[in-house]
Image 1 (cartoon, rainbow, N blue to C red):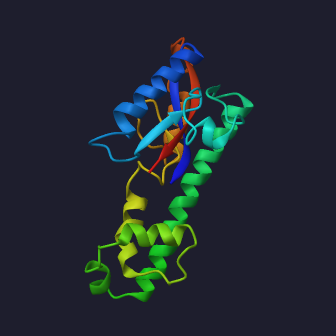
Image 2: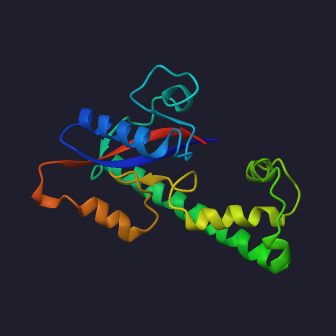
Length: 189
């Protein structure tokens, strides 16, 4: 599944912001040991036909200032998508708690769960929610990284609360000459 996450970085130029975002992607979000995303492509990269500009076109900027209109929109969307994912998981958990016994939820069948979830999320599965999804939704609610989080900070941590976002946007203030940038990244999970 492809999605466009946003990484908020502190840098002195757009070029530095892109470099910082790439480091965060490589060291915190992609690769062995992290397992959050299979790979990620920044939108300054024209080399791929299946990700980044090759997938989404030229409408998505490679980097923008966070306090610009476009930057504010990217941040707003990231927070909205994160909240929507959280609320969907809560809704599904409530439904399962009402439908299944504690025993059924704790002894869920784990084989093929990822495939079933993907089918349900893409609308290819007409079956009702199964107990096997319960731990998946619990993980989505409690885990602040991965495909349920659409916005990341300069440390590679998922931003899932408005207080965290406010802290990230106000961290540098007038004490530092660095600017706050938003770097969109096409990731695959």
